[in-house]
Amino acid sequence: MGVLAPERPQRRRGVFVMPKTFGELLRELRNARGWSGEYLADEAGVTQGLISKYETLGRKPKPETIHKLAKALDVDPAPLLFAAGYASGEEDVTPPRIAPGVRVIIDLGDGPKEGTLSEKTLRAIAELLEDVKPVESDR
Image (cartoon, rainbow, N blue to C red; front, side, top):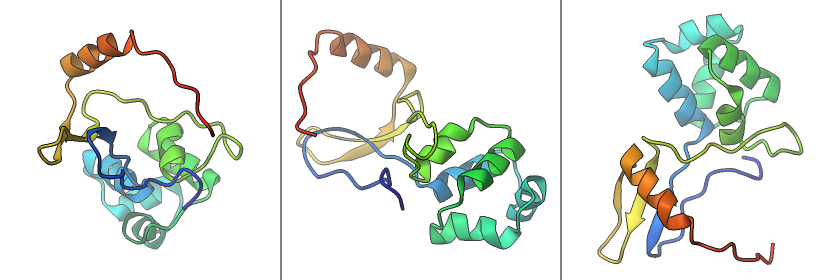
Protein backbone atom coordinates (compact mmCIF):
# COMPACT_ATOMS: atom_id res chain seq x y z
CA MET A 1 0.00 0.00 0.00
CA GLY A 2 0.96 3.68 -0.10
CA VAL A 3 2.42 6.02 2.45
CA LEU A 4 -0.63 6.08 4.70
CA ALA A 5 -1.23 2.33 4.73
CA PRO A 6 -2.81 1.14 7.96
CA GLU A 7 -0.40 -0.51 10.40
CA ARG A 8 -0.97 -2.30 13.68
CA PRO A 9 -0.21 0.05 16.57
CA GLN A 10 2.79 -0.65 18.80
CA ARG A 11 1.83 -2.43 22.02
CA ARG A 12 1.80 0.18 24.76
CA ARG A 13 -0.71 1.74 27.10
CA GLY A 14 -3.23 4.08 25.57
CA VAL A 15 -6.02 4.37 23.02
CA PHE A 16 -5.39 3.42 19.43
CA VAL A 17 -7.63 3.91 16.40
CA MET A 18 -7.60 0.81 14.23
CA PRO A 19 -7.92 2.03 10.63
CA LYS A 20 -9.68 -0.16 8.13
CA THR A 21 -7.97 -1.31 4.97
CA PHE A 22 -9.51 -0.21 1.69
CA GLY A 23 -10.89 -3.71 1.14
CA GLU A 24 -12.44 -3.89 4.62
CA LEU A 25 -14.08 -0.49 4.19
CA LEU A 26 -15.35 -1.31 0.71
CA ARG A 27 -16.83 -4.62 1.89
CA GLU A 28 -18.46 -2.91 4.89
CA LEU A 29 -20.07 -0.23 2.69
CA ARG A 30 -21.22 -2.82 0.15
CA ASN A 31 -22.65 -5.16 2.80
CA ALA A 32 -24.41 -2.26 4.54
CA ARG A 33 -26.44 -1.83 1.35
CA GLY A 34 -27.05 -5.56 0.97
CA TRP A 35 -25.22 -5.55 -2.36
CA SER A 36 -23.24 -8.39 -3.91
CA GLY A 37 -19.81 -7.76 -5.34
CA GLU A 38 -21.31 -8.27 -8.78
CA TYR A 39 -24.00 -5.64 -8.19
CA LEU A 40 -21.46 -3.06 -6.95
CA ALA A 41 -19.26 -3.81 -9.95
CA ASP A 42 -22.18 -3.21 -12.33
CA GLU A 43 -23.12 0.03 -10.57
CA ALA A 44 -19.53 1.33 -10.65
CA GLY A 45 -18.69 0.13 -14.17
CA VAL A 46 -15.89 -2.22 -13.10
CA THR A 47 -15.55 -6.02 -13.04
CA GLN A 48 -16.67 -8.25 -10.18
CA GLY A 49 -13.17 -9.77 -10.17
CA LEU A 50 -11.71 -6.36 -9.43
CA ILE A 51 -14.08 -5.87 -6.47
CA SER A 52 -13.01 -9.27 -5.17
CA LYS A 53 -9.31 -8.38 -5.52
CA TYR A 54 -9.83 -5.14 -3.57
CA GLU A 55 -11.76 -6.86 -0.78
CA THR A 56 -9.75 -10.07 -0.41
CA LEU A 57 -6.28 -9.53 -1.87
CA GLY A 58 -5.69 -5.94 -0.74
CA ARG A 59 -5.16 -4.63 -4.27
CA LYS A 60 -4.88 -0.82 -4.40
CA PRO A 61 -7.29 0.81 -6.85
CA LYS A 62 -6.57 3.91 -8.88
CA PRO A 63 -8.11 7.15 -7.55
CA GLU A 64 -10.44 7.29 -10.57
CA THR A 65 -11.79 3.84 -9.70
CA ILE A 66 -12.29 4.87 -6.08
CA HIS A 67 -14.35 7.84 -7.26
CA LYS A 68 -16.51 5.50 -9.39
CA LEU A 69 -17.04 3.18 -6.41
CA ALA A 70 -17.87 6.10 -4.09
CA LYS A 71 -20.39 7.45 -6.59
CA ALA A 72 -22.03 4.03 -6.95
CA LEU A 73 -22.17 3.66 -3.16
CA ASP A 74 -23.32 7.29 -2.74
CA VAL A 75 -20.56 8.08 -0.24
CA ASP A 76 -17.82 10.68 0.14
CA PRO A 77 -14.69 9.30 -1.58
CA ALA A 78 -12.28 10.77 1.03
CA PRO A 79 -12.37 7.85 3.52
CA LEU A 80 -11.97 5.36 0.66
CA LEU A 81 -9.03 7.33 -0.77
CA PHE A 82 -7.43 7.57 2.66
CA ALA A 83 -7.90 3.84 3.32
CA ALA A 84 -6.23 3.10 -0.04
CA GLY A 85 -3.20 5.10 1.07
CA TYR A 86 -3.48 8.17 -1.11
CA ALA A 87 -1.73 11.11 0.52
CA SER A 88 -2.75 14.72 -0.03
CA GLY A 89 0.05 15.09 -2.61
CA GLU A 90 -1.67 12.62 -4.93
CA GLU A 91 -5.26 13.46 -4.09
CA ASP A 92 -6.97 15.98 -1.82
CA VAL A 93 -7.86 13.65 1.05
CA THR A 94 -8.90 14.47 4.58
CA PRO A 95 -8.15 11.64 7.01
CA PRO A 96 -11.23 10.09 8.60
CA ARG A 97 -12.14 11.67 11.93
CA ILE A 98 -12.65 9.78 15.13
CA ALA A 99 -16.41 9.46 15.32
CA PRO A 100 -18.96 7.39 17.19
CA GLY A 101 -18.65 3.78 16.18
CA VAL A 102 -14.95 3.93 15.25
CA ARG A 103 -13.19 0.70 16.26
CA VAL A 104 -10.43 1.29 18.82
CA ILE A 105 -8.08 -0.73 20.98
CA ILE A 106 -7.57 0.49 24.53
CA ASP A 107 -4.76 -0.82 26.75
CA LEU A 108 -4.51 0.68 30.21
CA GLY A 109 -2.04 -1.90 31.42
CA ASP A 110 -4.44 -4.78 32.05
CA GLY A 111 -4.40 -6.08 28.47
CA PRO A 112 -5.89 -4.73 25.27
CA LYS A 113 -9.65 -4.38 24.90
CA GLU A 114 -11.33 -3.76 21.57
CA GLY A 115 -14.54 -1.83 21.13
CA THR A 116 -16.19 1.30 19.75
CA LEU A 117 -16.58 4.79 21.11
CA SER A 118 -19.95 6.27 21.98
CA GLU A 119 -20.77 9.91 21.40
CA LYS A 120 -20.75 10.47 25.19
CA THR A 121 -17.22 9.03 25.42
CA LEU A 122 -16.02 11.19 22.53
CA ARG A 123 -17.38 14.32 24.25
CA ALA A 124 -15.53 13.36 27.45
CA ILE A 125 -12.29 12.83 25.50
CA ALA A 126 -12.74 16.20 23.74
CA GLU A 127 -13.18 17.94 27.10
CA LEU A 128 -10.03 16.31 28.44
CA LEU A 129 -8.06 17.28 25.34
CA GLU A 130 -9.00 20.96 25.60
CA ASP A 131 -6.26 21.40 28.20
CA VAL A 132 -3.61 19.39 26.31
CA LYS A 133 -0.91 21.51 24.73
CA PRO A 134 0.56 20.43 21.37
CA VAL A 135 4.00 18.84 21.41
CA GLU A 136 6.54 19.71 18.72
CA SER A 137 7.43 16.73 16.58
CA ASP A 138 10.79 15.74 15.05
CA ARG A 139 9.04 14.76 11.84
